[in-house]
Image (cartoon, rainbow, N blue to C red):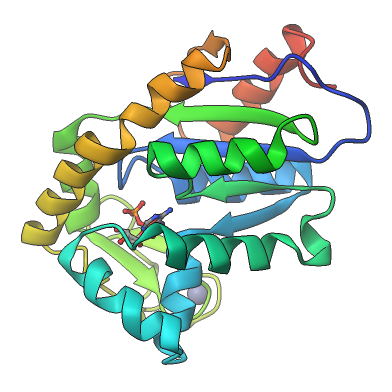
Length: 231
Ligand code: ADP
Ligand code: ZN
């Protein structure tokens, strides 16, 4: 399902695409396709945290404990990191937010920042809990480029090796059964209400089935064009 789309838009404004959906609903995969299609930056808060953890920054050290338990990182850590990233030149034309906002407070903060200054599209990816568990428990992620594979459904050509950059694949520490269940619980409690928030600030809805990522991205762009919300 795709929920879109701000009506008051001015030409030349940056495009901000917001992806909502449970962990494992395909936000990352969709984001890559949509970023190419709209020629805007792909900003994943999860990836930004993982970079900080890898580099052992102060922020990374603080965030790690929450991420490993499947809990959300506190807002003040998220905001500084994200808004700093959004101020870089590659975000000027617009960006796709993958993993943000994840709470109503985050959505409100973003709305304050963007109101009247951006063309906003909100995509809501819907998948069942069973599918989420199936996808995440078999997910393999590239250590270097972040590309994702699945042990059974989308295995790499060579075992444990990324098709795109030949680096090693790993299972994210939060992709284990217990942490996946906690992430799902956190999603229902804290992130699901964000959908209602966007409906309330008058966004219309278009639906999109679960297709392969390229076709999903394309069909959503065509639907937006038909509604004259996007040119
Ligand atoms: P997924 O969507 O597969 O759960 P992400 O890579 O988006 O994974 O996020 C991984 C973890 O990073 C989350 O479980 C959470 O702990 C933290 N995180 C990412 N984005 C946010 C956010 N906007 N607010 C709070 N925590 C976040
Ligand atoms: Zn790779």
